[in-house]
Image 1 (cartoon, helix red, strand yellow):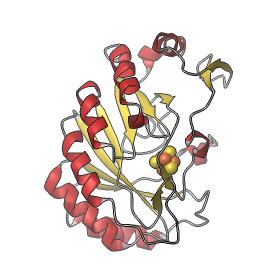
Image 2 (tube, helix red, strand yellow):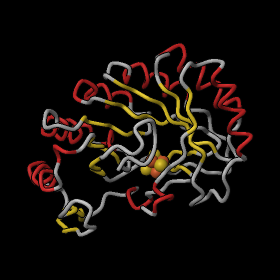
Image 3 (cartoon, protein in one colour):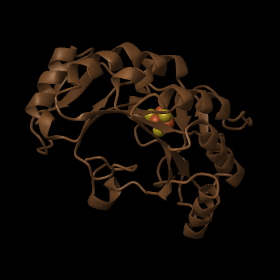
Image 4 (cartoon, protein in one colour):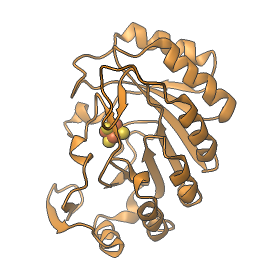
Length: 246
Ligand code: SF4
């Protein structure tokens, strides 16, 4: 089930690719930061039972597993990570094998790998991109103590390519450390690059290096300010924790 973003609640099969070159303070999947030697495949829809196979798992085996999980009955297949665009050839192969079988192909990405996106954007139905803020995100290996430059230029270039997909939306995770100007600069750049994109402000789910949610009044004020720049701004928290899915 999709747990966040404008398609929250839609039935979704997730394919999670290993490795990530960012470090977000709130990351809910740090086990994906490094490539794993094995892969877990769910064996029956909703049963919570898995088989374990050595990596890399052949595309045909992933498609067969998806068929066992009632692929055609789902609204989306989400290719996620980690950061899937670190392996664009795998994203392209998965999309080619799964597209046209029912679900829409949903690519979930940190929104920075522009050249990799250009290789696959024609093969996906939806690009769900994050807009990372320097207040809470580092490249792997960067110090948390040093101030880092923002990611705005890379994200804007990425969004320009992502806008070639049938649907794109942008998500910003808001934490107590988020600075208003970071969010508003992102909104201004979205407005000039892909103004019909939905901007989702997602109050952080406390975990990892983030202990608290932002104050509700602050999130609503940020949304109101962003709405003066963009026409479709939504505040949508993660829903998995509400019904107990990790
Ligand atoms: S980009 Fe995603 S997988 Fe990578 S650190 Fe951030 S939240 Fe975690």
